[in-house]
Amino acid sequence: MKAVVFRGIGDIRLEDVKEPKLEKPTDAIVRITASAICGTDLHMVRGTLPGMVPGTVLGHEGIGVVQEVGPDVRNLMPGDRVVIPSTIACGSCVYCRAGYFSQCNVANPHGPDSGTAFFGGPASTGPFHGMQAEKVRVPFAHVGLVKLPDEISDDDAILLSDIFPTAWFAAKLARVKRGSTVAVFGCGPVGQLAVASALLQGAGRVLAVDSVGSRLEQATRQGAEAINFDVEHPVETIKRLTHGIGVDRAIDAVGVDAEHAHRGPALKEAKAKRKEHAREVSEIAPKQNPDGANWHPGDAPSQALDWAVEALAKAGTLAIVGVYSIASTHFPIGKAMEKNLSIHMGNCNHRKYIPDLVGLVRSGGFRPSKILSNRMSIESAIDAYKAFDRRDAGWLKVELKPAA
Image (cartoon, rainbow, N blue to C red):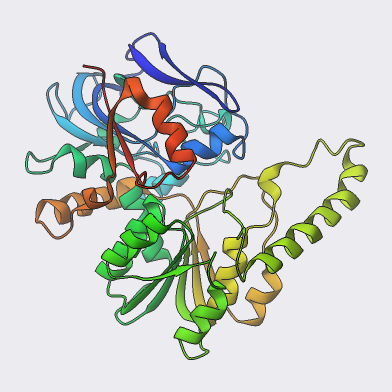
């Protein structure tokens, strides 16, 4: 079967790979009808999320039709149309039963303290082959697969696998309530749905920060107030628009690959922070390793987090759903403490939110497909990755269809 395969940093290929087979009684084999490219995939291709095993099939978003089930999968049968949550969970451990599916004690084969297990990720997450392929093996399918009603199109359904639940989770972490003023840093796919989720959960006002014109326009169409950090300093603008108070809630929807401002009013600040970080690394790295090899680019300070902390009102809440590697150690803890900020973060518990979001989409309460910008065959996946990585205008969220 055709699949998008990781071969090395900056090196992904469309290859013929072996079809998956049932390995355990709780497995299912799903024939993929749609997958997608996520910003997290780019982290791994760029190397800012290290530890990828060459030969791993990429992709953690997928929908499809059940083809085969193991003997302990008793709630599904071949022919069922399903959405596949990005994170993998057993459904039986104490964390799953409490709704913390991303902290499952069982799913990650490296043990209960090894972090979230998910499809198409680094060695530390399993690894499990991903869904940018024609078929996928789904562990713990009796819990991990959610049936899809016929009324929900593939275009809407594919966004229920990861980014819509993640965005909904972000607004929940941020404690958005009726009337809240919310800032969303990053207007990529998760950021767009974070804007929507905040509004759906009652936010009175949403400020969206990015530098890509087409993404800011999309956020504006959803009802957000756009702030281009290449044109104006985002913190100064947020403070001015909120009469000096700041926002009640902030969401970091970018993560480790957050871009620094590269022109305009925020340029001087960004350059100074990069210079200071370079000085710190030059002092620390020789003590660890003469050539500085222990330092990883994922350890760079995040401009988005700095701005979020500065833009928040006192006693505000910061939600972090943008992905950071375990090497990331920089955070403005002093500023956050002085302002009595509450900070919530983590990997989304997809299985907790997907059933309710299926109901929301089925009822017509929201159509996540409004942010879907490109539909392509998996045979064009490599070109799609390149355009998405460059943030080309009009490339917001890419759906991949199996080869004809």
